[in-house]
Image (tube, rainbow, N blue to C red; front, side, top):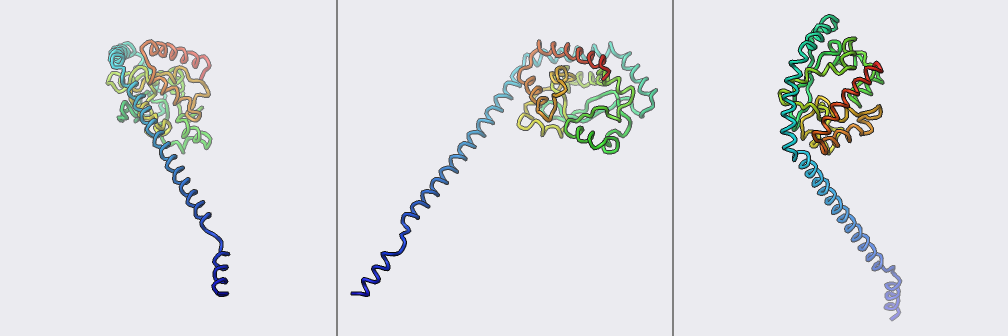
Amino acid sequence: MGMVRSVTLQYDNRPSGGAKSSAAVKERTQAVNTAVGERRISAEQHRAAIAAKKKALKIARGKKTYDTVKRVFDVAGSLMGLIVLSPVFLLISLLIIAERSGKRVFFKQRRLGMGGKPIYIYKFRTMIDNAEDVTRWLSGEQLKQYYSEYKVENDPRVTRVGKFLRRTGLDELPQLLNILKGELSIVGPRPIQESETVLYGKDKDLLLSIRPGLTGYWQAYCSGDTTYTNRKRQRMEIHYVLHRNLLWDIKICLATFGAIVRKVKRGQ
């Protein structure tokens, strides 16, 4: 009888695991429910982002009448520009040749057009030959700016004639050919390089849903702090894609001329 009592006491004195087991099960259940809830929220956010993207693309592509009228103006404007400005083309070509800074008069660069289709935009050459070798010509600080903003202040590769052409915007006159071919529009987002698409993230398809432009909202109205780094440039380009209209295009063209005049006066 004493042996039985001893065994019973030993059994009764063992620590009870029922409460701990119940708490552990409860914690695991809460963790699973939390994980499921987070996945549900994440999925909902993903669906919302896709829906917003589709809606934005629908808005961007839903201006068929506007796009048709704009294309008519693009063809007429570029054709008239090429005819009227042909003496200017000849004069600039002679200036570039006389400077003897390189063998070519024109320069073409690979960019992305509507739908992400690769195009080559034309410019008057404003840099010395082999300017693509940026590590040879640019300092460390300039390279940092080049890789973040795709442009450099006081670029040592730019020729004397090139500085004048850039300051006046005349270097981009050959892009009238791109407009006539249907690769560009007179007004639109700036045509970007493929490496720049990552800077637009989820808005990349939206940016590429319309023809890029010879000039645009960003070029006409940007200020010194409008950069890729602070994302102001991206916001301006996407804002134009979503809200573009003919009246705004006319205002952008006028603002572009004003911006060029200001740059010439400042000697930039």
